Image 1 (cartoon, rainbow, N blue to C red):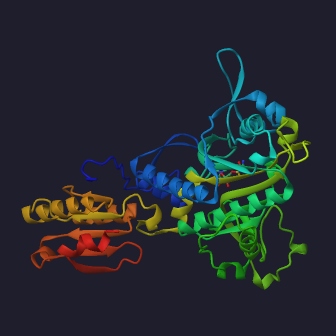
Image 2 (cartoon, rainbow, N blue to C red):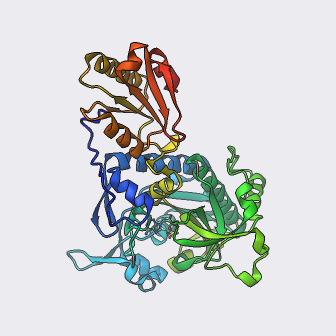
Length: 439
Ligand code: 5CA
């Protein structure tokens, strides 16, 4: 993509409404634009990152055996009356009436909707287990939307729902998601610590929040210092092997980590000198709630002896749009964002320092064409702007590597290669540049 043609509305000044660095940088880098409180449009650069995050989430869901569906954003109130949550949900739920005066709502989550689908479609224990997920916009009329996409009112969530015949099966489904979450976040270069958590309006008695430690996070957390030394790089696992999956869950639950809601100082097993009390960003949460929805909604299957068995369920959420903000909180410096390669909007930035110089432009155009032919995503700064402005813009948007073409290097057959994360620069022979970055 040529920057001269790209829709990238960068801001020079720090926007006054942004209190945390990720919000500030998302606005400055032209990734999002606020529509109303907690509701955003995603502009080209931001949307690319959102899609990449979504794709990693999708691949790890698929790998674990979950199947993708797409449920609507608008749901009938009736469904929520069946589960008893219509009144409980209170003001956070956006309630709407259609032209026939029927009560509808913009879904804050989908337990009811999916229980209806599976309950109506699955009749026998032989069709279990099942795990369905979707990646869909949610609306929660949060009291205090803030920090940009971190606490939005409209936000993109991956939510999935497991259905099993019995509690043992449901526990394995829970464990599989636990492992899938570890893999998902590790692929984005994040250390998301699973912490015992409160279940809130979703219900149930087993729940973990996956939390990235960050001073700007909204959650208060307590973590055993040794947790940070665990190896978060999870190898590919055989999800059908209950023992292996359980072993990984045991490894990550053997050390103390709890959110402020359930942490009790007097009952904490970790001595104060080993306990980190800090804040974090919740990027995902898992719940096991048994038959909380299947019983009131009549979602039953015929068991092995023909008896009616209510479905055992769990639900699992990942904040896809929140992750974009969380990734920036974990990856930035004074000059801007530093994208991990796995989620970067473009793999490379190419800067032509002197568009007025014919040789420079010919070499830059040629390299741009070759990089694109090699299947590399490049953002090419071909604008007529000062070198300083170009460097600042490229650093701000945080692509992992920059290739810089200027007349002096070119005379020696070289371009400059700058690695964004550590700022290291080196000369690279022009004719080796494509080979260096081709997969
Ligand atoms: N039904 C369950 C699991 S599918 C559920 O809704 N869980 S949740 O409430 O914990 O939300 C799942 C994830 O969505 C959270 O971990 C968080 O990362 C993200 N999330 C929740 N509320 C917001 C919000 N207001 N803005 C951005 N992301 C949010």
